[in-house]
Amino acid sequence: MAAIVECVPNFSEGRDPAIISQITDAIQAVEGVALLDVDPGNATNRTVVTFVGSPDAVVEAAFQGIAKAAEVIDMSRHSGAHPRMGATDVCPFVPVSGISMEECAALARKLGARVGKELDIPVYLYEDAASRPERRNLAAVREGEYEALPKKLQSPEWLPDFGPAKHNARSGATVIGARPFLIAFNVNLNTKEKRKAMKLAAMIREKGMLQKDAEGNILRDDEGNGIRKPGLFKCVKGIGWYIPEYERAQLSFNFTNYNVASLHDVVDTVRRLADDEGVVVTGCELVGLVPLDALEQAGRHYLSRQGLNPGVPVDELVEVAIQSLGLRDLGPFDPQERVIDFRIASDGPLVQKTIRDFVDTTSSSAPAPGGGSVAALCGSLSAALSAMVGSLTSGKKGYESHWLACNEMAVRAQALKDAYLADIDADTAAFDGIMTAMALPKKTPEDKHARRSAMRAATIEAIEVPLRVLERTIPTLNCVDVALDGNRNARSDAGVAALVARACAEGAYYNVLINLEGFADKDYAKAALGRADAALREVMGRTEATTQLVRQQLVDSIS
Image (spheres, rainbow, N blue to C red):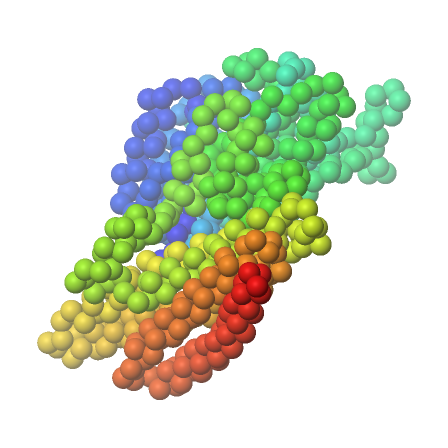
């Protein structure tokens, strides 16, 4: 799997399109990166840029963006609502696929060293790239902001990790690091009262709020530090402010781990607390991109609250999340543009075909798609049928004891369905990989060695794809088992789910065997065949019992 890294630099300019374009043009000029999003803010005077690519390309693009920002932004003249300390205020690397957090931290250090040396900008490392524990938190590093830098840089405790320990009046300082995916999320209120927004943000965020006595004095501990009441959610940073362009107050949150504090839980809590304060949430907005998983979680949450089955297709889950979170209340929201998973990857060319086009292509003289892709298609249909039966059972009178099991099953079935769909194209891509390896030159000993290595890797991939399709039919049959206890009017659908799961398994098994034929690595071949035999035996035994049961039930129903 090719390594993909996301980079999300924040530049201290959100009002001048010409300046922003110069920076983004410098980033896009680097081969191997894709610019996904540019999100300027007038009140914050800040632009959040998101791009992805290979590690080396992303580091180069980040440097070029930082260099251009240093050229076109003058921090001595900057003002805005958002905390900041540099022309490029913060530049995090985020692992997307095929790369670890530790490797992203190494990229941050590599970039920081170059920025410090070549651009004479003080650089601090934060989060997973931090050089010491007290520098992990961005807020701690940025405390005092740009205005505090001249004094801060003179303190031994705040010497930069890279670059000169002297104030760069034009560019300020830059914070570079590695972190998990961060979701920047704003919540608007129907009030101009900044104090209410600040109070609500303090109640939500992990940092909480300072405690005061009856006279309004801050309570302090024995060391003189203000005593704080922790907020309601860990892994959430927040601030409340007034946004003139919206003529209302706003809560601005950073979710540093949406699996600890979810979008929907925070939004639901803000709505409740806002009502206690006599104000109303009038809409929410994302700054930058959001992981698909975060919206899927929200979609399932709101469907469950409505008493509906959450095991629906991804597009429906996302739409429920968008509407429930109010992401279109402040402006357009296109998930194809704002969900990072949709920007990085999409359905393969075979899955994108119409049914007729797929069948026609399969029936042509082209060697692919073939049996492996068709087997994966059968698996996707089995999972889809089980999800359907689950939805037809949930909420139906007389099946109350099955609702929860059907809800959980439908969610699993949707995930299995999507995995099978991806393997329709993966199987054909694996075949193409073998053809490409076979066409490699074999004139010299070096050519022959490279060709043998490529053939081995391509053949293993061609074995592993149908093998995982085969092994996936076991959890797929677990979904069928739940469907069999569901709505009796859908028994035939559950039966067909079992039949196409069996076709999927046996078809995938054949593709494992044909690719194992003549494979030189006998140890690998023996292990792969053992896995395939075990999975097929289980599938065949279970589907035989299931189809007999369904057949008998349907016959009995008309007797």
